[in-house]
Length: 113
Image 1: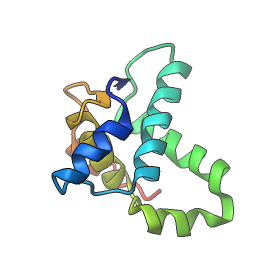
Image 2: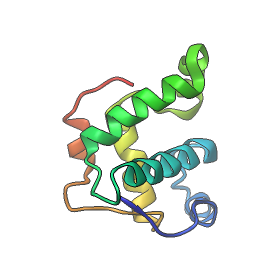
Image 3: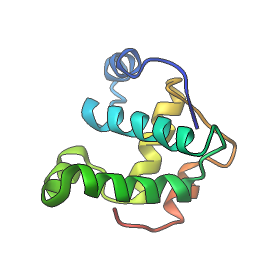
């Protein structure tokens, strides 16, 4: 997963098409998480498993005891939800996805965040 289009521009387009399934803060967080994950891996492809684990760890560091409230506000509770956000960002050009980056790949993890 790599960065491409500005997420704010993409969000405006999603919103105009009634496809904004997640609030802007959630999508921004996922875009930044993907960017950081790619940098840590020196540009190597980040798998759905790795991104899910990175999300879980970073989210705990960033939000701590407020995590449940933030997850509720954002609607991202599981690897399946994270996958939906990633695929949506890919659809709007914010992330460059690999053929293995599918909703099913995230859903099959069955991982709560």
